[in-house]
Figure 1 (cartoon, rainbow, N blue to C red):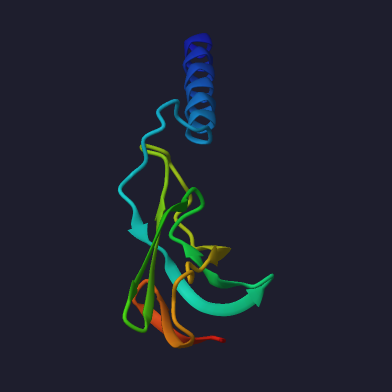
Figure 2 (spheres, rainbow, N blue to C red):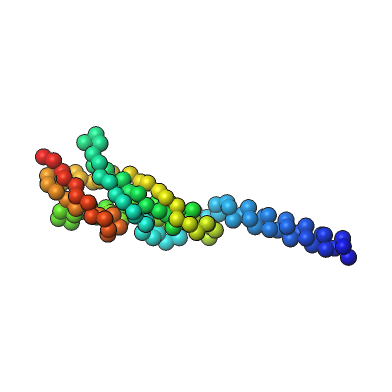
Length: 132
C-alpha cells in the first residue's frame, strides 16, 4: 500500500512541476488579449535632435503585459496619445503592477508654432511649446 501512495505522490508532484513550468512559458499562439489603456503616472516632454518626445512613466497591470499600440491624434491645439497594453492570450501572469518607461516620438510635422496641450490616456495634460 505504501508503494502505491509513493507512486501517486510522485505522479502528482511531476504533474505539478509540468503545470508550473508551462505557466511560465509563452503559448505558441501569437494572439493577445484585448488592449487596455496603460496606467500612466507621469509624462515628461523633451526635445532632442529637433524632434519632440514624450517619456511616459507608468505601470503594467501584470508582469506579462507590454505596450501593444500607440495612437496619436491632433485636434486644434491638443496632441492626444492613447497608449495600450496587452498580454499574450491565455498566459498566466503575476497580478502585480510592473513599472515601465516608454519614449514616444511626437508627430509635430506641419504643426504651427505655439503652445499645445499633450495628454496621454486622457490624463496628465502637459504643455508643449513648438518654437518658430
